[in-house]
Length: 115
Image 1 (cartoon, rainbow, N blue to C red):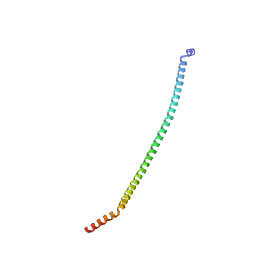
Image 2 (tube, one colour):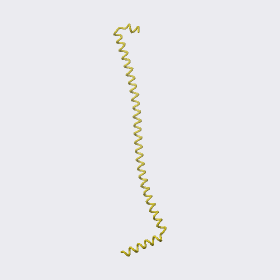
Image 3 (spheres, one colour):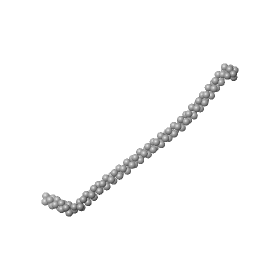
Image 4 (cartoon, rainbow, N blue to C red):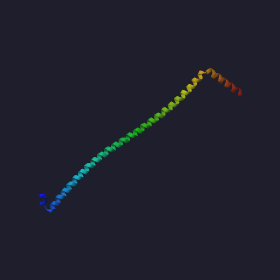
């Protein structure tokens, strides 16, 4: 304080301006450091968001592929079920082949009479 009281008014103003300039410079450096940190953090968030988008797109593509495979398997299953039913019916006809042949012959004879 003794040194400050011995300074002239201009010297005190100059010292105050220098102090203010030093504080402003320090505050500016702090703001720039904070801004740089925020930019790095934003970059990390942007990279994480892009990774999530890429992963989501890959999952959608995989789901489409699985849907296509499921459709193909469903069609194949329907074909196999139809084939099974035809074979089952053929086998059931073979069990009573003599009776079935007699029935067919009777139907053919009736149709021949009508014609």
